[in-house]
Length: 317
Image (cartoon, rainbow, N blue to C red; front, side, top):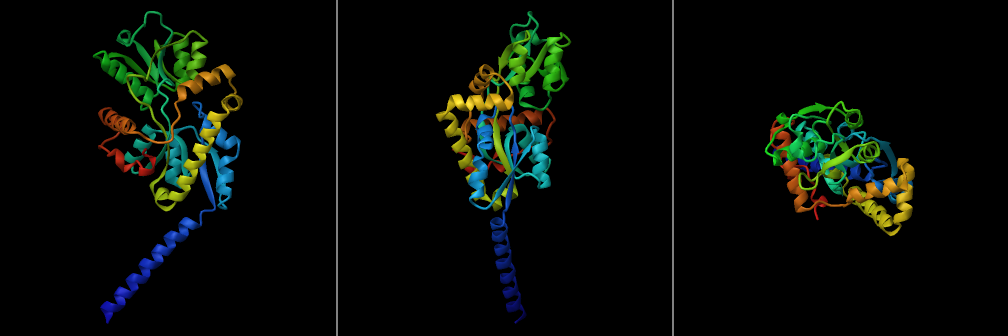
């Protein structure tokens, strides 16, 4: 009898837990999304400026809250704290670092593959190829795709990071140091590249042929488990914004230029470098594995991570 009652009790608890989980998924009243304008995230700019997400989620009775958070690390922290549901544009390095630190952040969609957006720049006329970097001062942010680019460019020339004087520095300060002659090269991206070119800097190399930078959309693993329908709705809305952009390119570029406070000429250049997407390919998965190995080799994470542990299957083509 006791055994029978125990089984009944377990069944009631299981049903209650299922109902509670289902209720939790149904009770979503608002969704918190990061708004990341840089480097030149035109589909996201369109989505926000035209109120596309508000309309799509509003039809489900869900309010949309946007938060401007440019830093990938801060987006991961906000997801861990439960204050951010969707990181609209985050770099793969931040996702890997989050998971390595025990914060299960999951990729659920692609965003862009901006290989031309990330560069090594110089204003030193004697530096013509990566071979000439030996013994030179290079400024840039450590633990980023730009850091990966520098290591890859040196490796292709039979060198390592120890063959240069690498100075960990933010992009704006690094570019300024390069233009003033305090360092020989700077790791620069997006609008910083355009501005540097106007002031005597030139691009030595981009990521093309070296590494494959990935900007993606991500969320907490628990959110993905509880609200897959909300993620699908978000991706569908992103695709709608991307389709509008492609059908109304001049208007889209003008909107992006206004929001970013740049010229139409610069907007066109940044757009040409962006390479927007909405999913991950087999090559992208290889790039994620490369990122994991890079971080292991450079002491940024302590243990290997299986890329498929932080990639939701809905992100795959």
